[in-house]
Length: 132
Image (cartoon, rainbow, N blue to C red; front, top):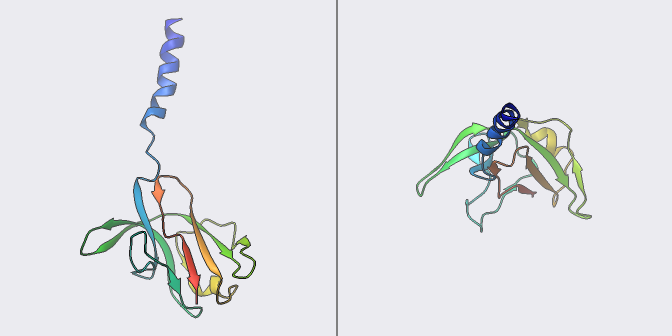
């Protein structure tokens, strides 16, 4: 009986070390520039339909003077149709980086890109990017 309880304790132990949800701030970047204009509840994300470069989602170190990208994290992309608000997955692939021009070929002005993190340890409050 004692060895059964010990085994249960060993198996349940790692569960208590799980990371808290949404503890690491993350943001979308186009090349080296953060897409959101202000990392606050008022911040908005917009991209021109003809933008070019590499889209990433990265953890960030936020301070009053700068927002610094730290580590790229995997993400998925969906496209929200501007007229019907229907969400469609861009691809089933998990991305660490993505050529934005490839995604924008499937978009029109008024559509939005919706970025999804794959783990709940990341907070990505500015996850919808309006295409202008």
